[in-house]
Amino acid sequence: MAVNRRMRNCDREWRSRQTLKVREHSVLGPYVDGLSKLAVTSYKDIESLMSEGNKSRTVAATNMNEESSRSHAVFKITLTHTLYDVKSGTSGEKVGKLSLVDLAGSERATKTGAAGDRLKEGSNINKSLTTLGLVISALADQSAGKNKNKFVPYRDSVLTWLLKDSLGGNSKTAMVATVSPAADNYDETLSTLRYADRAKHIVNHAVVNEDPNARIIRDLREEVEKLREQLTKAE
Image 1 (cartoon, one colour):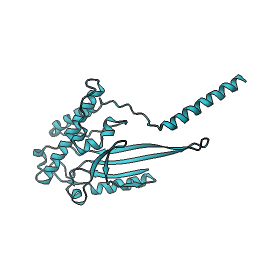
Image 2 (cartoon, rainbow, N blue to C red; image 1 turned 180 degrees about the horizontal axis):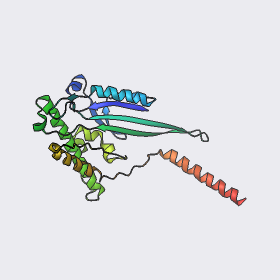
Image 3 (cartoon, helix red, strand yellow; image 1 turned 90 degrees about the horizontal axis):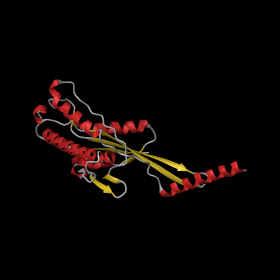
Image 4 (spheres, rainbow, N blue to C red; image 1 turned 90 degrees about the vertical axis):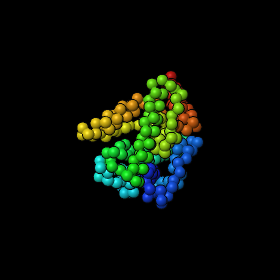
């Protein structure tokens, strides 16, 4: 099991320390070049790394929130299950990836009273969320069969590029939307609900990727077992 440290958008302090590039592997898909992977053996280890990531995350006070998130956060967990077949002496691995994403909320500059770096951060957040909305709409249209070849703008933002496999790939994805009960936030609440409702229309068909050789061995073994049962019944 391995855990990827958090990556943050719009974080001026982080950028001054280190700039990480997002690249795409021909098989593994989008990844952050130079991001460290740490081995863990328990939930306690995972919780510790998540806490460390939260400490590094940028937050700042605005007129709407005393601890407003100024960045998105992505925490990735890779689970590896090693299988060993005693009969054949072969071994294989099953690998699963879990992405936990905490999106910063969209902002209206007039309400937040943001200026300078805070205003720039809010602008970058809104831009990435807008791109995410366009990606969701394109994927929802494809799922509805409206336009199977419709272009999906994953690369228009770092956020959507990193979440490419989670949004429209071989995956199962759940979205939790946070809304405000205050009448003053009616427009934001309505926009968020529309956002989430659109995401519900995305249909992914997740399947377990399996090594071709392992599948052949498994199929042959099942066939042998069936033949043995038939021979036993015939006797």
